[in-house]
Image 1 (spheres, one colour):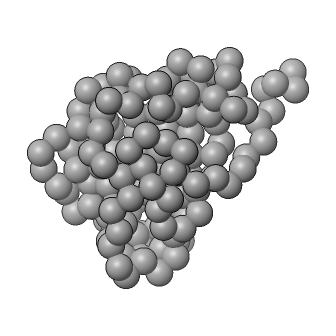
Image 2: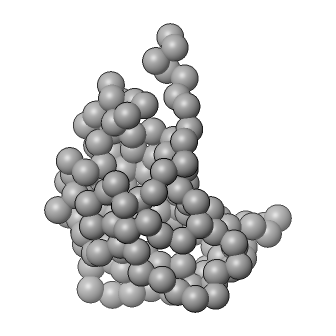
Length: 134
């Protein structure tokens, strides 16, 4: 049963294909290190007072469906503005929002302004993000 209780650690996104460190702090909830028998990759990134948009990811696809979740730091979860690339089009998004990313859809995001959390959930065998990136 101990394998079912996962430790959460802060790590840089530079360990991922097509990613650099990025703003704020990235917390890994489930990946191939702490959940190799699982099929879900989950991270959460916190940012505070973003006012200088920074691109830290190249557009990419996955072999499986994934979700982006944006939650601002206000009580109603507002307070975070991001741009999300879906296919060829950028979309300005105000939190709270969830973005469904079907398998094979090119995507990306960047923080524009505000404070809050970004959650990324990717279905992937062995909870290994890098194995699904194209």
